[in-house]
Length: 56
Image: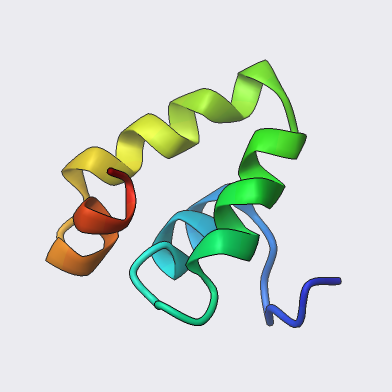
């Protein structure tokens, strides 16, 4: 699925910092519904600046 090694929310949020995976990861998180919005929000405080920038 999606070519990701892991597809849990935390892994997908981390992929938001990867320019080649960010769009697919973001769409997958949104597709999962309301409960996953908190995972997307958590990316705003991620230790990796590229992940935080991928959130915008």
